[in-house]
Length: 116
Length: 113
Image 1 (cartoon, rainbow over the protein chains, first blue to last red):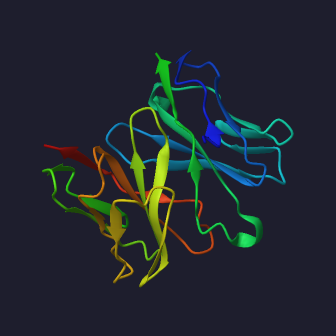
Image 2: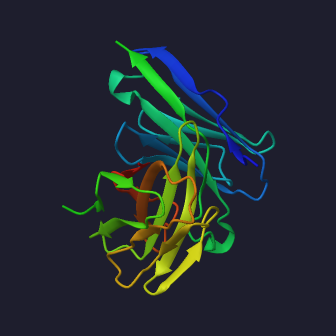
């Protein structure tokens, strides 16, 4: 049962344009969402997060949008740069009352390629 | 430099053999985690530990064992009971108050001979 899904295995974008990575979830108990970025042969690194009490969180070129009614979140990268080429994972947790114990459920990942 | 180290980078296992993957962190984090990544799949949680001498099973704990004798160390043993051990294994750690923001090591790729 895949509770967090990234339906696009890959995305190709031209440098300077917007990259939009999508993620859907089925568990309505999830209330905290994160995006991680992973380069080949390295561990993932935290990128940005959003709590369910918000619908948008911005950090420089990265913005995450959350649509709770649709159980959908997206990561926007503007402008995209070749160094952004990596695998992007979305993750979700149930953090009500701070009792998630860090248990994250990850999506399958989307490979982003930004062409110069 | 603070961080998480995993060793070895590549590990080969023979049939019926137990192997242990090392994970060490000097971030002074209380919580540590082990994940498995298979091609085309996301990371799946094997075991996690919130504090020394305590750990819990994750979603796919069968065929694995862990110990947490020191705050800095969280080794994972892949036992012979794990029938499909070939995967990329990632260790992570986090602070007590922000456990979802996890810091990952570089990973160990386990291959079966």
